[in-house]
Amino acid sequence: MKATFWKVAFVSVFAIFFVAVWPMAGMDAGKRLAIIKALKIEGVVGENNKGYLEFKGAPKAKEVVDEENSVRKKAYEAVAASTKVSVGQVSAQRAAQLASESPAGTWIQLPDGRWAKK
Image 1 (cartoon, helix red, strand yellow):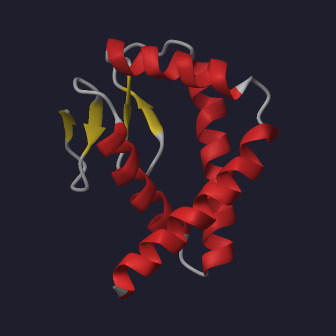
Image 2: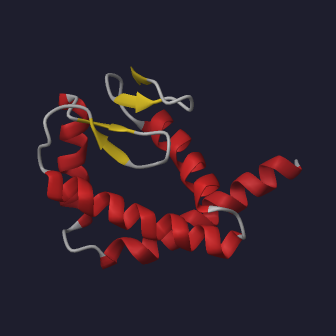
C-alpha cells in the first residue's frame, strides 16, 4: 500500500512538472514526439537507461533529439527538486516507464548498460 502511494505520488508530481516544463521547448511537442516515434521505429534512436534518447544509428534529426533531451532534463530536475530525490533516481524511474511504453522493435538500454531491441 505504501509503495503504491509513493508510485502514484511520483507519477503525479512528474506529470505536473512535465506538463509545466514541456511548453518551454522551441518545437511543438506533438511534432517533436511524432518525429521521435518515427526515429524509434526506424531504429535510429533508443531509450537509454537514464531516461534520455540516444542515437543507435546515424544521427538523424539531431536537433529534435537534443531538444527532447533538454526538455526531459529540465523535467527530471524539477521533479527531483520537488520530491527531494536525486535526478538520477528520477531519470532511472522515467527510463523504465519509457521502456515499457515504447513499441516493439525499439532500442532500449538495460540498467546494466547493454542495448537490446524490445
